[in-house]
Image (tube, helix red, strand yellow):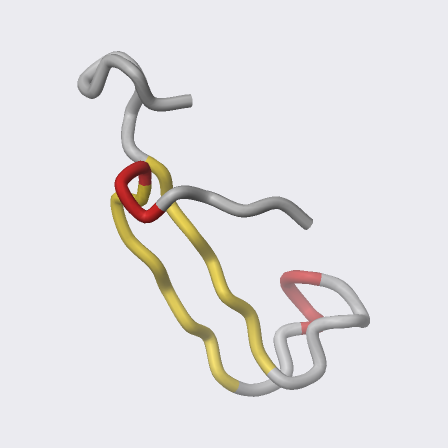
Length: 46
């Protein structure tokens, strides 16, 4: 796992419930999807 600075986040999505069909067998309780900003629009982001 890694940490993402809050300033680099464009958005987050929480998928509640089993997501094994899309995200694998370990996604039994839910999935947290983090979207980062586009580095071409925001210089200094990774």
